[in-house]
Length: 167
Image 1 (cartoon, one colour):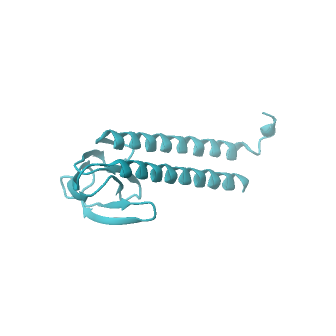
Image 2 (tube, one colour; image 1 turned 120 degrees about the vertical axis):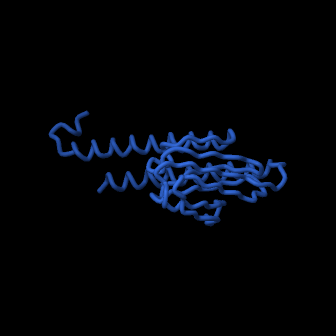
Image 3 (cartoon, helix red, strand yellow; image 1 turned 135 degrees about the vertical axis):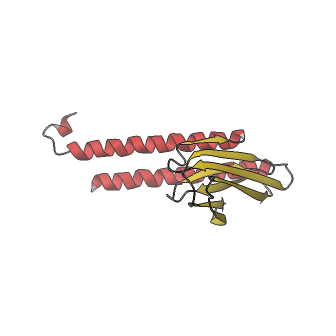
């Protein structure tokens, strides 16, 4: 019971931290942006994605709004073209519920390729520097979450051992 509360507490703190970081990054980059309104392009080329629905969502500090959804064709390719007025956060969501967080500005071009099954952990991303840094942050966060989950399982499996509390 205590482990479950601690786990939920850790996840809540991580979610709030990520939201705060994204909020500050949006404010800083949006406030400093001098680019004109333009088109941003997201190209996807995902194997084993045929027939699967992917969502494109725009995220701001209060809401997440679905902008487009697409059933990926047999070749695994699709191109999203967006009118982007200022730098903002966008989510590309897989049918598994996992999302790829992108920071897009007017004129940006992002290419996502790899496996739909391993999305977003097993993809290749070609994107502006900000988006690449953001993706690296989320990849490291997911890795750390797996380590915490593994440690929690280890503790749960051995908490009844005779000498558990001695170390």
